[in-house]
Length: 128
Image 1 (spheres, rainbow, N blue to C red):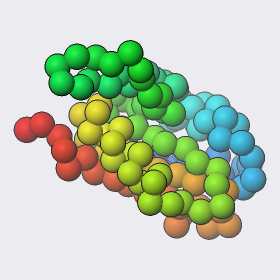
Image 2 (cartoon, rainbow, N blue to C red):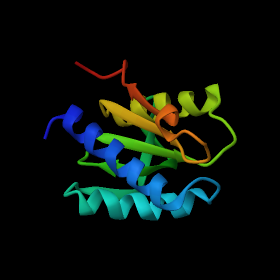
Image 3 (cartoon, helix red, strand yellow):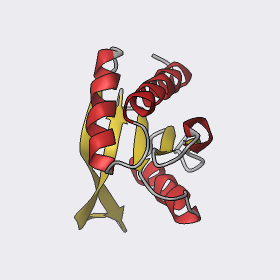
């Protein structure tokens, strides 16, 4: 499945979760609901996927966690905050760089207008 098709399905799942739950809940609630919707849509999705940090040829004894990884191609970073900040975009950009994944989706569920709070971020650091 191509990345564009995956991200299209992800958006649909995000809308479904938002329309059913609305804003104002914890990220963990949205994560569980979105994971369910993604699997229901026939997508292979895993949550809290460990992301190792490679530095100077070694793997550091620390790791980050990708909220949801879809089809081993798209990462989803979930937020439930008053507004998305530059640091949230930087977080996704860094996760993309560390993982060498092509695309990330940053979504903030704590909003009145969900369509304005789903951001598709392309990995400009991918190895060719």
